[in-house]
Image 1 (tube, rainbow, N blue to C red):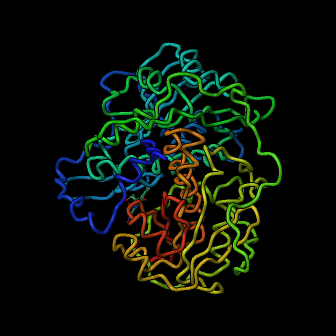
Image 2: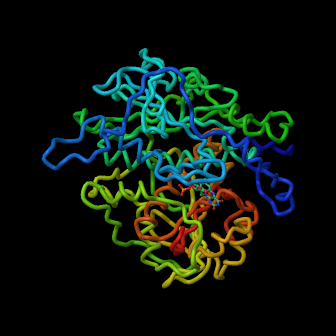
Image 3: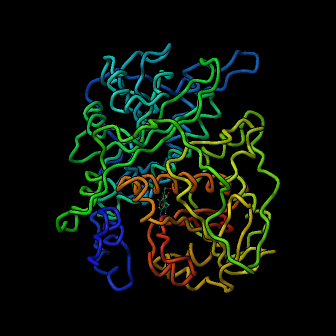
Length: 510
Ligand SMILES: Cc1cc2nc3c(=O)[nH]c(=O)nc-3n(C[C@H](O)[C@H](O)[C@H](O)COP(=O)(O)O)c2cc1C
Protein backbone atom coordinates (compact mmCIF):
# COMPACT_ATOMS: atom_id res chain seq x y z
CA UNK A 1 0.00 0.00 0.00
CA UNK A 2 1.46 3.43 -0.87
CA UNK A 3 2.34 5.48 2.18
CA UNK A 4 -0.16 8.27 2.86
CA UNK A 5 1.67 11.58 3.08
CA UNK A 6 1.17 13.49 6.29
CA UNK A 7 -0.78 16.72 6.10
CA UNK A 8 1.15 19.99 6.27
CA UNK A 9 0.18 20.52 9.93
CA UNK A 10 1.59 17.11 10.86
CA UNK A 11 4.64 17.75 8.71
CA UNK A 12 5.16 21.14 10.40
CA UNK A 13 4.88 19.48 13.80
CA UNK A 14 7.51 16.87 12.89
CA UNK A 15 9.84 19.45 11.37
CA UNK A 16 9.67 21.80 14.36
CA UNK A 17 10.25 19.17 17.03
CA UNK A 18 13.20 19.76 19.34
CA UNK A 19 15.46 16.77 19.49
CA UNK A 20 18.68 16.34 21.51
CA UNK A 21 20.56 15.51 18.29
CA UNK A 22 19.63 18.71 16.46
CA UNK A 23 18.86 21.29 19.15
CA UNK A 24 22.40 22.74 19.14
CA UNK A 25 22.15 23.90 15.53
CA UNK A 26 18.77 25.53 16.27
CA UNK A 27 20.25 27.56 19.15
CA UNK A 28 21.54 30.54 17.19
CA UNK A 29 22.97 33.68 18.81
CA UNK A 30 20.41 36.44 19.07
CA UNK A 31 21.15 40.05 18.31
CA UNK A 32 19.00 41.72 20.96
CA UNK A 33 19.32 45.11 19.29
CA UNK A 34 17.27 43.67 16.43
CA UNK A 35 14.39 42.52 18.61
CA UNK A 36 11.11 43.72 17.06
CA UNK A 37 9.01 46.24 19.02
CA UNK A 38 5.99 44.55 20.61
CA UNK A 39 3.75 47.58 20.01
CA UNK A 40 1.94 48.91 16.96
CA UNK A 41 1.86 52.56 16.14
CA UNK A 42 -0.90 54.32 14.25
CA UNK A 43 0.07 57.62 12.70
CA UNK A 44 -3.51 58.77 12.28
CA UNK A 45 -6.67 58.03 14.23
CA UNK A 46 -8.73 59.16 17.17
CA UNK A 47 -7.55 58.09 20.60
CA UNK A 48 -9.94 56.94 23.36
CA UNK A 49 -8.21 57.06 26.71
CA UNK A 50 -9.33 54.11 28.85
CA UNK A 51 -7.35 55.06 31.97
CA UNK A 52 -9.90 57.40 33.57
CA UNK A 53 -12.40 54.51 33.57
CA UNK A 54 -10.16 52.44 35.83
CA UNK A 55 -10.93 54.52 38.89
CA UNK A 56 -12.97 52.51 41.35
CA UNK A 57 -16.44 53.94 41.74
CA UNK A 58 -17.93 54.33 45.17
CA UNK A 59 -20.52 51.76 46.23
CA UNK A 60 -23.23 54.40 46.05
CA UNK A 61 -22.76 54.87 42.31
CA UNK A 62 -24.74 52.87 39.84
CA UNK A 63 -23.60 49.85 37.77
CA UNK A 64 -20.26 50.28 35.98
CA UNK A 65 -20.76 51.86 32.56
CA UNK A 66 -19.52 50.58 29.23
CA UNK A 67 -16.28 52.56 29.50
CA UNK A 68 -15.39 51.05 32.84
CA UNK A 69 -16.30 47.54 31.74
CA UNK A 70 -14.32 47.69 28.50
CA UNK A 71 -11.37 49.34 30.17
CA UNK A 72 -11.17 46.58 32.78
CA UNK A 73 -11.74 43.85 30.23
CA UNK A 74 -8.80 45.06 28.13
CA UNK A 75 -6.51 45.68 31.10
CA UNK A 76 -7.13 42.22 32.57
CA UNK A 77 -6.93 40.70 29.09
CA UNK A 78 -3.73 42.13 27.67
CA UNK A 79 -2.86 45.31 29.57
CA UNK A 80 0.58 46.22 30.88
CA UNK A 81 0.98 45.00 34.44
CA UNK A 82 4.73 45.40 35.13
CA UNK A 83 7.80 47.20 33.89
CA UNK A 84 11.37 45.87 33.95
CA UNK A 85 14.39 48.04 33.21
CA UNK A 86 16.84 46.39 30.85
CA UNK A 87 20.12 47.45 29.18
CA UNK A 88 18.16 48.55 26.12
CA UNK A 89 15.29 50.34 27.89
CA UNK A 90 12.01 49.41 29.52
CA UNK A 91 10.52 45.98 28.99
CA UNK A 92 6.80 45.79 29.73
CA UNK A 93 5.02 42.67 30.95
CA UNK A 94 1.35 42.08 30.37
CA UNK A 95 -1.66 40.43 31.96
CA UNK A 96 -1.26 37.50 29.55
CA UNK A 97 2.05 35.62 29.53
CA UNK A 98 4.00 35.30 26.31
CA UNK A 99 6.81 32.93 25.35
CA UNK A 100 10.04 34.86 25.73
CA UNK A 101 8.06 38.01 26.59
CA UNK A 102 7.81 38.78 22.86
CA UNK A 103 4.05 39.52 22.67
CA UNK A 104 3.27 38.71 19.05
CA UNK A 105 -0.48 39.16 19.62
CA UNK A 106 -2.39 42.36 18.93
CA UNK A 107 -5.96 43.05 20.01
CA UNK A 108 -8.52 44.93 17.92
CA UNK A 109 -12.10 45.94 18.62
CA UNK A 110 -14.71 46.24 15.92
CA UNK A 111 -17.72 48.32 16.90
CA UNK A 112 -21.11 48.24 15.27
CA UNK A 113 -21.81 51.49 17.13
CA UNK A 114 -22.22 51.53 20.92
CA UNK A 115 -22.85 54.35 23.40
CA UNK A 116 -19.07 54.60 23.93
CA UNK A 117 -17.52 53.53 20.66
CA UNK A 118 -18.82 54.86 17.33
CA UNK A 119 -18.84 52.29 14.53
CA UNK A 120 -15.37 51.50 13.24
CA UNK A 121 -12.09 49.74 13.82
CA UNK A 122 -9.97 50.15 16.95
CA UNK A 123 -6.56 48.90 17.96
CA UNK A 124 -5.83 48.38 21.65
CA UNK A 125 -2.73 50.36 22.58
CA UNK A 126 -1.51 48.58 25.68
CA UNK A 127 1.27 51.08 26.35
CA UNK A 128 -1.15 53.93 26.93
CA UNK A 129 -4.17 51.79 27.81
CA UNK A 130 -6.18 53.44 25.06
CA UNK A 131 -8.01 52.54 21.89
CA UNK A 132 -7.06 54.17 18.64
CA UNK A 133 -9.89 54.38 16.13
CA UNK A 134 -8.15 54.09 12.78
CA UNK A 135 -11.23 53.55 10.60
CA UNK A 136 -14.62 55.05 11.18
CA UNK A 137 -16.92 53.43 8.65
CA UNK A 138 -19.40 50.66 9.19
CA UNK A 139 -17.67 47.35 8.73
CA UNK A 140 -20.11 45.09 10.60
CA UNK A 141 -21.80 43.56 7.52
CA UNK A 142 -18.37 42.80 6.07
CA UNK A 143 -17.36 41.22 9.39
CA UNK A 144 -20.48 39.07 9.36
CA UNK A 145 -19.77 37.97 5.83
CA UNK A 146 -16.14 37.16 6.71
CA UNK A 147 -17.40 35.04 9.63
CA UNK A 148 -19.93 33.28 7.41
CA UNK A 149 -22.85 34.82 9.28
CA UNK A 150 -21.99 33.43 12.70
CA UNK A 151 -25.23 33.94 14.70
CA UNK A 152 -23.48 35.62 17.65
CA UNK A 153 -22.49 38.56 15.47
CA UNK A 154 -26.14 39.17 14.58
CA UNK A 155 -26.89 39.77 18.25
CA UNK A 156 -23.72 41.66 19.30
CA UNK A 157 -22.43 45.18 18.85
CA UNK A 158 -18.78 44.57 19.61
CA UNK A 159 -16.25 42.06 18.39
CA UNK A 160 -12.66 41.53 19.37
CA UNK A 161 -10.02 40.22 16.99
CA UNK A 162 -6.72 38.71 18.10
CA UNK A 163 -4.08 38.99 15.40
CA UNK A 164 -0.36 38.22 15.41
CA UNK A 165 2.76 39.88 14.07
CA UNK A 166 4.61 36.65 13.33
CA UNK A 167 8.14 38.08 13.24
CA UNK A 168 7.96 39.28 16.84
CA UNK A 169 8.11 35.63 17.91
CA UNK A 170 9.74 34.05 14.82
CA UNK A 171 12.69 36.41 15.30
CA UNK A 172 13.68 34.21 18.23
CA UNK A 173 11.86 30.92 17.79
CA UNK A 174 11.95 30.65 13.99
CA UNK A 175 9.42 28.22 12.52
CA UNK A 176 8.48 26.80 15.92
CA UNK A 177 7.16 30.27 16.78
CA UNK A 178 3.83 29.33 15.18
CA UNK A 179 3.14 26.99 18.10
CA UNK A 180 4.01 29.64 20.66
CA UNK A 181 1.98 32.36 18.91
CA UNK A 182 -1.18 30.28 19.25
CA UNK A 183 -0.33 29.20 22.81
CA UNK A 184 0.18 32.85 23.75
CA UNK A 185 -3.11 33.74 22.11
CA UNK A 186 -4.83 30.95 24.01
CA UNK A 187 -3.61 32.45 27.30
CA UNK A 188 -5.01 35.77 26.16
CA UNK A 189 -8.36 34.13 25.34
CA UNK A 190 -8.38 32.61 28.83
CA UNK A 191 -8.03 36.10 30.29
CA UNK A 192 -10.75 37.43 28.01
CA UNK A 193 -13.12 34.63 29.02
CA UNK A 194 -12.70 35.41 32.73
CA UNK A 195 -12.45 39.19 32.50
CA UNK A 196 -15.55 39.21 30.29
CA UNK A 197 -17.50 37.35 32.98
CA UNK A 198 -16.32 39.92 35.56
CA UNK A 199 -17.61 42.72 33.36
CA UNK A 200 -20.94 41.35 32.12
CA UNK A 201 -19.86 40.24 28.67
CA UNK A 202 -20.07 36.76 27.22
CA UNK A 203 -17.38 36.06 24.64
CA UNK A 204 -18.40 33.82 21.74
CA UNK A 205 -15.30 32.42 20.09
CA UNK A 206 -15.14 32.20 16.32
CA UNK A 207 -12.22 30.22 14.94
CA UNK A 208 -13.64 29.68 11.45
CA UNK A 209 -13.47 32.87 9.38
CA UNK A 210 -12.24 34.02 5.98
CA UNK A 211 -8.68 34.89 6.96
CA UNK A 212 -7.86 37.18 4.09
CA UNK A 213 -11.11 39.13 4.37
CA UNK A 214 -10.32 39.84 8.05
CA UNK A 215 -6.72 40.75 7.21
CA UNK A 216 -7.95 43.23 4.59
CA UNK A 217 -10.59 44.64 6.92
CA UNK A 218 -7.99 45.37 9.62
CA UNK A 219 -5.39 46.61 7.13
CA UNK A 220 -2.93 43.93 8.23
CA UNK A 221 0.24 43.35 6.26
CA UNK A 222 -0.54 39.82 5.11
CA UNK A 223 3.17 39.07 4.60
CA UNK A 224 3.88 39.70 8.29
CA UNK A 225 0.60 39.35 10.17
CA UNK A 226 -2.40 37.09 10.45
CA UNK A 227 -5.81 36.93 12.10
CA UNK A 228 -5.79 34.38 14.92
CA UNK A 229 -9.23 34.40 16.56
CA UNK A 230 -12.46 36.38 16.63
CA UNK A 231 -14.67 36.94 19.62
CA UNK A 232 -18.23 38.21 19.41
CA UNK A 233 -18.74 40.08 22.69
CA UNK A 234 -22.33 39.73 23.90
CA UNK A 235 -23.19 42.58 26.27
CA UNK A 236 -25.14 40.86 29.05
CA UNK A 237 -26.56 44.18 30.27
CA UNK A 238 -28.00 44.88 26.84
CA UNK A 239 -29.59 41.50 26.13
CA UNK A 240 -32.91 40.12 27.17
CA UNK A 241 -31.49 36.65 27.57
CA UNK A 242 -28.20 34.85 27.21
CA UNK A 243 -27.36 33.75 23.71
CA UNK A 244 -27.06 30.02 23.09
CA UNK A 245 -23.67 28.39 22.51
CA UNK A 246 -22.69 27.80 18.92
CA UNK A 247 -19.98 25.96 17.11
CA UNK A 248 -16.66 27.79 17.30
CA UNK A 249 -14.45 25.96 14.79
CA UNK A 250 -14.70 25.27 11.08
CA UNK A 251 -12.42 22.92 9.17
CA UNK A 252 -9.91 24.07 6.58
CA UNK A 253 -8.58 21.90 3.79
CA UNK A 254 -6.06 19.17 4.59
CA UNK A 255 -3.04 19.67 2.41
CA UNK A 256 -1.02 16.58 1.66
CA UNK A 257 0.38 17.69 -1.69
CA UNK A 258 2.91 20.30 -0.68
CA UNK A 259 6.35 21.08 -2.05
CA UNK A 260 9.63 20.86 -0.12
CA UNK A 261 9.31 23.88 2.18
CA UNK A 262 12.58 25.53 3.24
CA UNK A 263 13.41 26.13 6.90
CA UNK A 264 12.26 29.63 7.80
CA UNK A 265 9.30 29.36 5.40
CA UNK A 266 7.36 26.68 7.25
CA UNK A 267 5.48 28.97 9.64
CA UNK A 268 4.11 31.09 6.82
CA UNK A 269 3.37 28.04 4.70
CA UNK A 270 1.29 26.36 7.41
CA UNK A 271 -0.53 29.58 8.17
CA UNK A 272 -1.51 30.07 4.54
CA UNK A 273 -2.40 26.40 4.08
CA UNK A 274 -4.75 26.48 7.06
CA UNK A 275 -6.67 29.54 5.88
CA UNK A 276 -10.34 29.37 4.95
CA UNK A 277 -11.86 31.38 2.13
CA UNK A 278 -15.40 30.00 2.00
CA UNK A 279 -17.98 28.67 4.41
CA UNK A 280 -17.00 25.12 5.43
CA UNK A 281 -19.69 24.74 8.09
CA UNK A 282 -21.64 22.19 6.02
CA UNK A 283 -25.33 21.50 6.30
CA UNK A 284 -25.48 22.02 10.06
CA UNK A 285 -24.06 25.55 9.81
CA UNK A 286 -22.99 27.03 13.14
CA UNK A 287 -25.37 24.84 15.14
CA UNK A 288 -23.59 23.16 18.01
CA UNK A 289 -23.82 19.39 17.76
CA UNK A 290 -23.43 17.86 21.20
CA UNK A 291 -21.88 14.37 21.15
CA UNK A 292 -24.41 11.57 21.43
CA UNK A 293 -24.30 8.51 23.70
CA UNK A 294 -22.15 7.97 26.74
CA UNK A 295 -19.08 10.15 26.66
CA UNK A 296 -16.08 8.79 28.46
CA UNK A 297 -12.56 9.92 29.16
CA UNK A 298 -10.20 8.79 26.43
CA UNK A 299 -7.87 6.60 28.49
CA UNK A 300 -8.67 4.06 31.10
CA UNK A 301 -6.03 1.66 32.33
CA UNK A 302 -7.32 -1.51 33.94
CA UNK A 303 -5.94 -2.12 37.43
CA UNK A 304 -4.17 1.26 37.60
CA UNK A 305 -4.22 3.33 40.80
CA UNK A 306 -7.02 5.88 40.67
CA UNK A 307 -7.27 9.00 42.79
CA UNK A 308 -10.52 10.97 42.97
CA UNK A 309 -10.01 14.68 42.29
CA UNK A 310 -13.33 16.04 43.59
CA UNK A 311 -12.50 18.94 45.86
CA UNK A 312 -13.86 22.24 47.18
CA UNK A 313 -13.66 25.03 44.62
CA UNK A 314 -11.32 28.02 44.73
CA UNK A 315 -13.12 31.12 46.02
CA UNK A 316 -12.72 34.27 43.94
CA UNK A 317 -14.31 36.79 46.31
CA UNK A 318 -17.27 39.11 46.09
CA UNK A 319 -17.88 40.23 42.50
CA UNK A 320 -14.81 38.21 41.50
CA UNK A 321 -12.61 40.90 42.98
CA UNK A 322 -9.90 38.41 43.95
CA UNK A 323 -9.88 37.06 40.41
CA UNK A 324 -9.36 40.55 39.00
CA UNK A 325 -6.48 41.22 41.41
CA UNK A 326 -4.95 37.84 40.57
CA UNK A 327 -5.07 38.63 36.84
CA UNK A 328 -3.34 41.95 37.40
CA UNK A 329 -0.59 40.58 39.60
CA UNK A 330 0.04 37.24 37.85
CA UNK A 331 3.65 36.56 36.90
CA UNK A 332 5.42 33.48 35.60
CA UNK A 333 7.58 32.01 38.32
CA UNK A 334 11.28 32.05 37.50
CA UNK A 335 12.46 29.54 40.11
CA UNK A 336 11.02 26.88 42.43
CA UNK A 337 12.37 25.75 45.79
CA UNK A 338 11.80 22.06 45.04
CA UNK A 339 9.47 21.71 48.03
CA UNK A 340 6.32 19.68 47.49
CA UNK A 341 2.82 20.90 46.75
CA UNK A 342 -0.06 19.39 48.67
CA UNK A 343 -2.60 17.11 47.04
CA UNK A 344 -5.31 19.57 48.04
CA UNK A 345 -3.56 22.32 46.06
CA UNK A 346 -3.14 20.17 42.97
CA UNK A 347 -6.80 19.14 43.07
CA UNK A 348 -7.93 22.76 43.41
CA UNK A 349 -5.88 23.69 40.33
CA UNK A 350 -7.47 20.88 38.33
CA UNK A 351 -10.93 21.78 39.55
CA UNK A 352 -10.69 25.40 38.40
CA UNK A 353 -9.10 24.50 35.09
CA UNK A 354 -11.23 21.60 33.92
CA UNK A 355 -14.50 21.89 35.85
CA UNK A 356 -15.78 25.40 35.00
CA UNK A 357 -19.35 24.37 35.87
CA UNK A 358 -18.28 24.32 39.53
CA UNK A 359 -17.84 28.10 39.32
CA UNK A 360 -21.22 29.19 38.04
CA UNK A 361 -22.30 30.32 41.53
CA UNK A 362 -19.37 32.71 41.61
CA UNK A 363 -20.52 34.35 38.38
CA UNK A 364 -18.22 32.55 35.94
CA UNK A 365 -19.28 30.89 32.73
CA UNK A 366 -20.18 27.26 33.33
CA UNK A 367 -19.36 26.28 29.77
CA UNK A 368 -16.83 28.68 28.24
CA UNK A 369 -16.05 28.35 24.54
CA UNK A 370 -13.05 26.37 23.33
CA UNK A 371 -12.23 25.28 19.80
CA UNK A 372 -11.70 21.54 20.09
CA UNK A 373 -11.49 20.65 23.76
CA UNK A 374 -12.57 17.08 23.16
CA UNK A 375 -9.26 16.59 21.33
CA UNK A 376 -7.05 17.70 24.23
CA UNK A 377 -5.76 15.31 26.91
CA UNK A 378 -3.88 15.99 30.13
CA UNK A 379 -1.02 14.05 31.71
CA UNK A 380 0.76 15.03 34.92
CA UNK A 381 4.23 14.04 36.08
CA UNK A 382 4.24 14.19 39.85
CA UNK A 383 7.65 14.66 41.49
CA UNK A 384 6.60 16.27 44.74
CA UNK A 385 2.98 16.33 45.86
CA UNK A 386 2.38 15.40 49.50
CA UNK A 387 -0.28 12.71 49.60
CA UNK A 388 0.20 11.54 46.01
CA UNK A 389 2.59 8.83 44.87
CA UNK A 390 5.33 9.97 42.47
CA UNK A 391 4.83 9.01 38.85
CA UNK A 392 2.94 9.95 35.72
CA UNK A 393 -0.85 10.21 35.72
CA UNK A 394 -3.58 10.65 33.14
CA UNK A 395 -6.18 13.17 34.28
CA UNK A 396 -9.71 12.02 33.45
CA UNK A 397 -11.81 15.20 33.58
CA UNK A 398 -15.21 13.52 33.18
CA UNK A 399 -14.65 10.90 35.86
CA UNK A 400 -12.69 13.49 37.85
CA UNK A 401 -9.83 11.22 38.72
CA UNK A 402 -6.11 10.77 38.25
CA UNK A 403 -5.10 7.44 36.71
CA UNK A 404 -1.51 6.41 37.30
CA UNK A 405 0.43 5.17 34.28
CA UNK A 406 4.04 5.16 35.59
CA UNK A 407 5.58 4.89 39.10
CA UNK A 408 8.84 6.82 39.38
CA UNK A 409 10.31 10.14 40.37
CA UNK A 410 11.01 11.85 37.05
CA UNK A 411 12.80 14.98 38.33
CA UNK A 412 16.05 14.29 36.52
CA UNK A 413 14.27 13.36 33.32
CA UNK A 414 11.96 16.39 33.50
CA UNK A 415 14.97 18.66 33.75
CA UNK A 416 16.30 17.14 30.55
CA UNK A 417 12.93 17.03 28.75
CA UNK A 418 12.41 20.76 29.42
CA UNK A 419 15.73 21.50 27.67
CA UNK A 420 17.65 21.67 30.95
CA UNK A 421 15.39 24.29 32.50
CA UNK A 422 15.41 24.10 36.30
CA UNK A 423 11.68 24.83 36.32
CA UNK A 424 11.10 21.26 35.09
CA UNK A 425 13.39 19.75 37.71
CA UNK A 426 12.20 21.71 40.74
CA UNK A 427 8.46 21.70 40.02
CA UNK A 428 6.23 19.57 42.24
CA UNK A 429 4.07 18.69 39.24
CA UNK A 430 4.55 19.13 35.49
CA UNK A 431 1.42 19.08 33.39
CA UNK A 432 1.33 18.09 29.71
CA UNK A 433 -1.41 18.95 27.26
CA UNK A 434 -1.46 16.56 24.33
CA UNK A 435 -3.55 15.77 21.26
CA UNK A 436 -3.82 13.10 18.61
CA UNK A 437 -2.83 15.23 15.64
CA UNK A 438 -4.01 12.75 13.05
CA UNK A 439 -7.47 12.69 14.56
CA UNK A 440 -7.51 16.47 15.00
CA UNK A 441 -6.57 17.02 11.35
CA UNK A 442 -9.23 14.51 10.27
CA UNK A 443 -11.77 16.68 12.12
CA UNK A 444 -10.62 20.23 11.35
CA UNK A 445 -8.11 19.91 8.51
CA UNK A 446 -4.77 21.66 8.97
CA UNK A 447 -6.49 24.47 10.89
CA UNK A 448 -6.74 21.99 13.80
CA UNK A 449 -3.18 22.94 14.65
CA UNK A 450 -4.29 26.46 15.50
CA UNK A 451 -7.28 25.28 17.56
CA UNK A 452 -5.27 22.80 19.64
CA UNK A 453 -2.63 25.34 20.60
CA UNK A 454 -5.17 28.00 21.51
CA UNK A 455 -7.13 25.57 23.69
CA UNK A 456 -3.95 24.38 25.43
CA UNK A 457 -2.97 28.01 26.10
CA UNK A 458 -6.46 28.79 27.37
CA UNK A 459 -6.27 25.90 29.85
CA UNK A 460 -2.73 27.02 30.72
CA UNK A 461 -4.05 30.44 31.69
CA UNK A 462 -6.66 28.97 34.02
CA UNK A 463 -3.87 26.94 35.64
CA UNK A 464 -1.74 30.09 35.91
CA UNK A 465 -4.44 32.08 37.66
CA UNK A 466 -5.46 29.29 40.01
CA UNK A 467 -1.82 28.75 40.99
CA UNK A 468 -1.22 32.44 41.70
CA UNK A 469 -4.42 32.56 43.75
CA UNK A 470 -3.10 29.67 45.88
CA UNK A 471 0.30 31.41 46.22
CA UNK A 472 1.97 28.67 44.19
CA UNK A 473 4.50 29.13 41.42
CA UNK A 474 3.64 28.44 37.78
CA UNK A 475 5.25 28.79 34.37
CA UNK A 476 4.46 27.61 30.87
CA UNK A 477 7.18 25.80 28.92
CA UNK A 478 7.07 25.97 25.13
CA UNK A 479 10.42 24.30 24.46
CA UNK A 480 10.81 20.58 25.10
CA UNK A 481 12.14 17.41 23.48
CA UNK A 482 8.85 16.40 21.93
CA UNK A 483 9.19 12.68 21.31
CA UNK A 484 11.27 11.97 24.40
CA UNK A 485 8.43 13.20 26.61
CA UNK A 486 6.21 10.38 25.38
CA UNK A 487 8.93 7.74 25.67
CA UNK A 488 10.03 8.71 29.17
CA UNK A 489 6.66 9.35 30.77
CA UNK A 490 4.72 6.59 29.03
CA UNK A 491 2.32 8.94 27.25
CA UNK A 492 0.87 7.10 24.21
CA UNK A 493 2.95 7.80 21.09
CA UNK A 494 -0.17 8.95 19.20
CA UNK A 495 -0.44 11.93 21.59
CA UNK A 496 1.55 14.93 20.35
CA UNK A 497 2.73 17.08 23.25
CA UNK A 498 1.34 20.54 22.65
CA UNK A 499 2.23 22.45 25.82
CA UNK A 500 3.75 22.09 29.29
CA UNK A 501 2.85 23.90 32.51
CA UNK A 502 5.14 23.55 35.53
CA UNK A 503 3.77 24.01 39.05
CA UNK A 504 5.80 24.36 42.23
CA UNK A 505 6.64 26.30 45.35
CA UNK A 506 8.03 29.66 44.25
CA UNK A 507 11.28 31.08 45.57
CA UNK A 508 10.28 34.28 47.29
CA UNK A 509 11.83 36.44 44.52
CA UNK A 510 10.17 35.18 41.34
C1 LIG B 1 3.60 29.69 25.39
C2 LIG B 1 4.56 30.04 26.47
C3 LIG B 1 5.76 29.38 26.57
C4 LIG B 1 6.67 29.70 27.59
N1 LIG B 1 7.82 29.00 27.70
C5 LIG B 1 8.69 29.27 28.70
C6 LIG B 1 9.86 28.51 28.88
O1 LIG B 1 10.13 27.57 28.13
N2 LIG B 1 10.67 28.82 29.92
C7 LIG B 1 10.41 29.84 30.79
O2 LIG B 1 11.18 30.08 31.71
N3 LIG B 1 9.28 30.59 30.65
C8 LIG B 1 8.42 30.34 29.63
N4 LIG B 1 7.26 31.07 29.50
C9 LIG B 1 7.00 32.20 30.40
C10 LIG B 1 7.38 33.52 29.74
O3 LIG B 1 8.78 33.65 29.71
C11 LIG B 1 6.71 34.69 30.45
O4 LIG B 1 5.32 34.60 30.23
C12 LIG B 1 7.19 36.02 29.96
O5 LIG B 1 8.52 36.25 30.31
C13 LIG B 1 6.34 37.17 30.51
O6 LIG B 1 6.35 37.19 31.91
P1 LIG B 1 5.04 37.02 32.81
O7 LIG B 1 4.43 35.70 32.45
O8 LIG B 1 5.54 37.08 34.21
O9 LIG B 1 4.11 38.13 32.48
C14 LIG B 1 6.36 30.74 28.50
C15 LIG B 1 5.13 31.41 28.39
C16 LIG B 1 4.25 31.06 27.39
C17 LIG B 1 2.93 31.77 27.30
